Length: 293
Ligand SMILES: [Fe+2]
Ligand SMILES: [Fe+2]
Image (cartoon, rainbow, N blue to C red; front, side, top):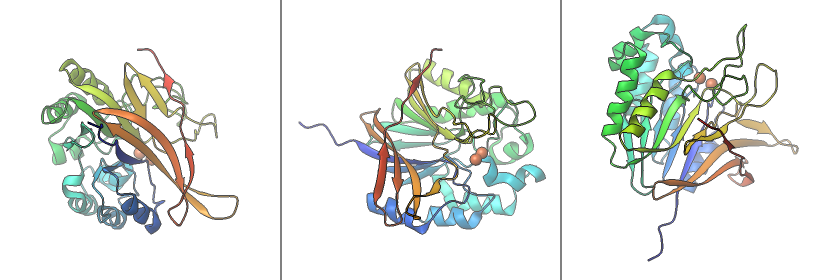
C-alpha cells in the first residue's frame, strides 16, 4: 500500500490589508487541504474579512489585535467586529478545534486578538465574547478545546506565539518595540496551555502564529528569527509584513508559507513567492533554529 500523498496547508501571516484578488485565485487553483490565517487582516476591515471568507478553499482563522482594534478602545465588540465574526462563522476557530483527517491532525485555535505580553488588554472584551476574564481562564479554555480534537497530533493556530521562546528583540516572539525594547512578548496563556495539553498525551507538532513582524523596530531593519524548534514542537511565524514586494522587473510578488503534512507530522515547510499570474517564482526552505528548553 502506498502512503497517502501529504496534505498541503498554506499559512498566511499578518496581511495588514496587503491582499489581491489574484491571491485568492492562486489559492483556489492550488486547492490545498486548508489555508490558515493568523489574523491582523486589516484594522476591523470587515470588507476584507468578507472577501477572504468567500475564497473557495477550506480555511481557518484566528483574528489578531488589529482585527479588533476599535473594540479594545471601546472595551466591547464594535458592530464591525461582530460582522467580521459573523462573516467567518465557524471558520474563526479561536478557542475551537478543526479536525483535518487528510493530514492526521487537529487544528487548535488559541486566544484571538492577542496584543502579546502579560495582559489581556481588555478583559471586558474577552468576557463578553468568550467568558474569559484572565489568562488562567484563557489557558483553560484552550485546553478544553483540545479535548474535542479527534487527533492526538495538533497544529496550534494563534495570533501571537507563546512565552518561553526568548527575550531578545530578534527572538521569534521577543519585544522589539517601545521605549525599552527587549523582553518576552509571547502569550503566557498559550505556554501554559501547551504544557497542559502535552501532559495529557497530545503531541503538539507545530504552533503557527504571527503578530511579531519579520523586520525589527530595534535594532531597526534587522530580521527576526521566525522558525524555531524546541522539544519537538515547530514554532512557525509567517508574518512577513508587508507580504507584497516589488520585484526587480517592477511586478509585485506575494508571500505564502506552504507546509506539507502527512500522518500527523509536518514533512515540509517552504516560503513561496507568487507573481500576479499565480506562478510560483521563488521557493525557499527556511532554516529552523533548534533551541533547548
Ligand atoms: Fe501585525
Ligand atoms: Fe498583531
